[in-house]
Image 1 (cartoon, one colour):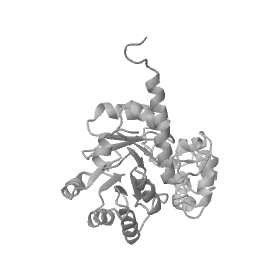
Image 2 (cartoon, rainbow, N blue to C red):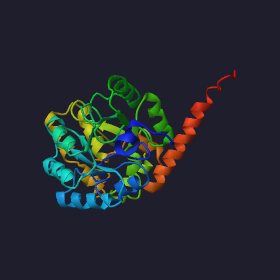
Image 3 (cartoon, helix red, strand yellow):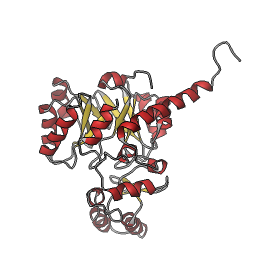
Image 4 (spheres, rainbow, N blue to C red):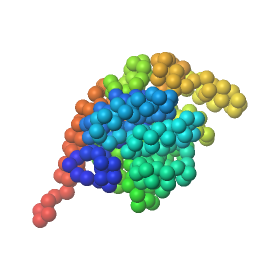
Length: 312
């Protein structure tokens, strides 16, 4: 991957590979630090963290001397404190999600912070993911191949894309669509450095490509591994259960139950369809190098499909 893109230039990173900000999985310093040291962009997932813990993680990652980001879900009850911390600690890059950015952009631009957003906005770059992605993909359920190409045609700012990508071949495919960088969530979730219960990782490693499902269609869907929780929810939905019944089942499960407590039968095990392409835990720094090598092989294969100039 010996080339520069608008994303590598904008963020000051060596490779246009972004580790997604994932609640619990990257709510620590270790994963983000390893990815950033390897030349990608490591991202601390602020969501479930307390401000003091976030500050400590930021300082640990900052000590690497490499660019990194903090992901802040703007709907979070601690979002205002998180945003203030990003400015106080001089975090170079903010990745915002699940909320509108307009009221914040001027303040962060004045401070020199790069603002990336998971939906189309007037920030420095946009992050778009298809329905294959784990966690909360867009409710319209459009696949990565289509939505990424549509966004690349529609905007002039740099585009980062993800959803269904687990290796360098997937990264190359998204570059063919016109992106400037690629975000990987599930692939970095399945590393020793991610902050998840071992049972969560084991369940994700055992999953096939059809091992996930969307729960909560028509509202705010979430992609999770199929388990007892999703089975109960699906059964209630099929028999025409009331909104209250569905809400009770949905609220009876949580990401924390799986990620922290290791209850992968009743918890929300958030992973993307790409879990079915992953069969081992790879240290995050080693993984970045592997992704680059795989990308180079995929790019060489594409280049070899066309004859050199002057030949037939």
